[in-house]
Image (tube, rainbow, N blue to C red):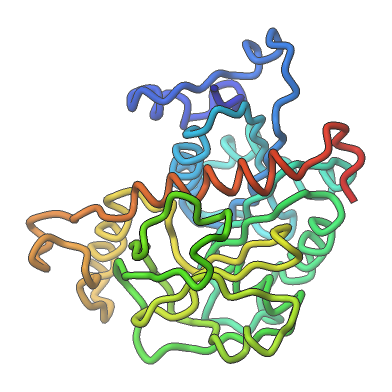
Amino acid sequence: MPLNLPDKLPAIELLKEENIFVIDNSRATQQDIRPLRIVILNLMPLKITTETDLIRLLSNTPLQLEISFMKIKSHTPKNTPIEHMKAFYEDFEKMRHEKYDGMIITGAPVELMDFEEVGYWDEIKDIFDWAQTHVTSTFYICWAAQAGLYHHYGVPKYSLKEKMFGVFRHTLNAPYHRIFRGFDDVFFVPHSRHTEVRREDILKVPELELLSESEESGVYMVMGRGGREFFVTGHSEYSPLTLDTEYRRDVSKGLPIEIPRNYYVNDDPDKGPLVRWRGHANLLFSNWLNYFVYQETPYNIEDIR
C-alpha cells in the first residue's frame, strides 16, 4: 500500500525513482481507508535527506500511512530552506491536540551538550510527555533515544573517548520478541555518535527491557511501557552513502576522524560501502508498524490514552 505524503514533498519524486509507491494528499482522499497517522519530529540538520531515508523504510508495508512532520518552535534549522519548513512542517503547539498512531523522533547534533543545556530542552520534554498520552508507540532514534531514556527513566549518557562510527554486529537478547520477527541471530546497524548509554544503567530500571546490544557499540535497543516506547541508539534508517558523506565532510574540514569501521570494502573509501543493514532495517520498521502501531492502536484514534 502507498504512503500518503504532503503534496510536493521532495521525497515523493526521489522515491518514485526507486519504484517506491507514494501518493499525495489529493489522491489519498479518494480512498475509503483509515490510514495510520504517523508524525515525525525531525531534529536532524539535513531534513530532506532524513525525510527521504525514513519514508523509504516506512513504505515497505501493506499499511496505508499518513505522514506529518513536526518541528520545534524554539529552534530554527540552518541547513534546510525556510520555504521547505513552512510548506511541510507544523509547530508542536499547533499539533498538541492531535493524536497519532505512531511517532518517530530523530537524532540531533547536540549530543556533546548536557541535556539541560540544549536550547530546546524544555520543549522536547513537553513533547516527550505529550507522546505518552497522544501516541500509541514512539520510536526514538540516537540522541532522541538517549534523551528519552534520561527524561523518562533517569538513565544517564556518557561521552566516548572516540566517536562510535561505522557498521557494527548486533545480537538479540530477546530473539522471539515481535520487534525482531524475521531477524537473523546477528545483524548489522550503522552508528554515528560521540556518547552512549550503558547496559548496567538500563538493567537498574525495572520498567525497561534491553532487547539488543553489540560487543563493539554497546546498547542498541531498549523497550519501555510494553512497546509504547522504543529507544534505538543506531541509525538503521541510514542510506548506503550517509556514513561516507559524514566521513568526507569531516575530512574536508580537517577534523580528527577515523575511517568508519566495517563499512568500506576492504576499509578503502575509494571502493565504496558494503551494505549489510538494509534488509534488517526494513524488517525493523515493518515490525514496529505492524505489531506495535497497527495491531495496538484503537480504531477510534481519540481513544489513545
